Amino acid sequence: MDEGGTRREGGGGYAGTFTTRFIEGLRSEMEERTSESHRMDRRRELGEFLRQRRTRIDPEQWGLVIRKRRRSTGLRREEVADLAGVSTTWYTWLEQGRDINVSEQVLLAVGRVLLLDHHELDYLFTLTGRVAPSDTGLRTELPETVDIVMRQLDPLPAAVYNPRLDILAFNEGYRWLMGMDLYPRPDHNALLLRFTNKDWQARIDPDMDTIATTVANFRAAYAQHVGEPAWKDLIGRLEGIALFDELWARHDVEPRTGLVKKYVHPEAGPLTFDSIPLWISKSSDVRITVYTPADAASKDALHSTVRVG
Image 1 (cartoon, helix red, strand yellow):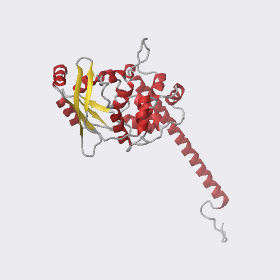
Image 2: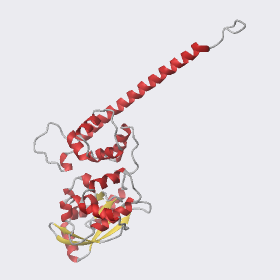
Image 3: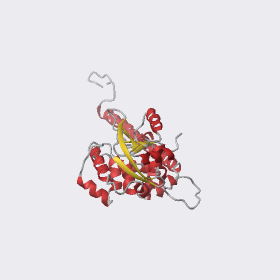
Image 4: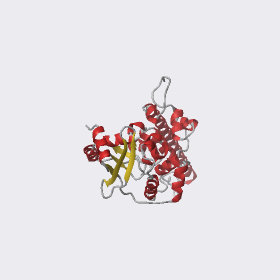
């Protein structure tokens, strides 16, 4: 009551303060429980998403030879872990929805193994509470007109590259020239194949030393992407290869220009092409490179062998 004996409105005093703090404490506890519940739901969804995407991957897409019949389809956990460069235990925990730390680089590696497109990769990052980096190497969506142009160029070999030398698309001429059916789709990167794949290396004339120029082109493009996880992932896969380490250590840089390139096709034999890079737009860093025969023998081999349509 006040001095006149009238009851005060509201809680007031110690009791009112205690009640307010008690209610705030309950609210905070409820919010924390709700937040934890959301995190658990998100981790559960993450595990189901990873398991589903794992089962849709044919092991042969990664060059794995399966000799015994399996009861379940797709990749096994240990295979995903091995291809992504993480421990089987860690990946199992991720699928089980355990509360573990996940780095950008590891998520990108898992996304690469599971062949996630950029929408799926965004989803993966969101479920782990992270924001997907702007440059994942999976984000380039080509206009439909590019595919039309590529088909019109056949039988001239043509491929679409981004600055990191990922091969984003190719036509029948390029498929024939480089044997694209021999390589798992996740390895469709010209620099990676040049240093790690014997079939790709066998198709490039050993007397033509263009690899130093290729590395110098890649180094020049890297200046705008230093520290980005997708680029670091590719460089990490190349480090330890003596020739790459030697060329990378030089820090040579060269702009991308047209070159005369020589190849050794397993059926057609020696071939020579002029490569012409054509940028898709003024602001785009994605280009179509067209390979035109540099001599009559290469032209005859190309037009008599490549089946178009």
